[in-house]
Length: 387
Image (cartoon, rainbow, N blue to C red):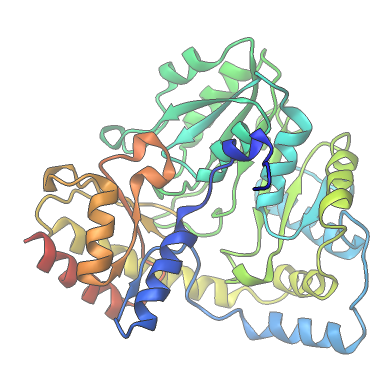
């Protein structure tokens, strides 16, 4: 037996990939599975982006690049973030990474020491808690409740902030709840944290996927918070580029060399031709993004109505991302029990709410990044099991 380091025992996982593997096994046995578990758009990457990557390969972009990214992509990202957030950034504020997850990991490694407290949303993206625990920090969950439409309880948040708080994680629109944090709440959070001076990791990966006029407000827009905030964003969700592995962090110029050094020690650099494709994604036509969001909106309305028609399900309408997060407590099932039952008996792959933290018990996360036909079929399959 190989003896593993103790820290490996503190490392969590992303259950979506485990459920996907189980679903693929069932498909290999000839069963039809409707995939509502994985968090990725079901669309193809827009053609102009693919063409840019092909041209890049043909032009010989197959070599190492600087660890924080080529200057052209860093400038493009800085211009894009400056325009969309209304806060001025330069290329020196940007580090390009293979996917957005490294920004979570590197931020924790750079800022959190043993015993330091990190406040994070729960239910929330599972890698937050995993990374906090892995680096030896203390995870401090901020509970999001359906009765409050999954908004942050500001009084509760204020109580959680302590002398040991070294990082606060915000996610808007959120995974798995699909809810944005209202501007008033962001401003109240800023008031609470103003004298504290602790950094904020603002996960804004779904900022372009919103509905009904919802407009995510970045805490960087508040005086005094630009240099304290690390924006996490990327190309996976907005441009249907999950497999390309392209993300970035925007941060204080004092932090970019540190994050770049972590890149050198782990990934060396982000794929060269992918960076060229990302330049096209940002600077090229945005029509396909609008079409994808419009289709997600159509599916959102159908899935929420469908879920609310199932006995024991109560689903809040999301205003961002592409996830529904129905309350299933009235069915009498625990979250994982029902998720497994739906997979093996109904052929519907979804995730237990507990995949997103202990406060996710009593919920399922059901992605609507699938066709309307498959969503409607899934609703009927769920009904056949529940009813």
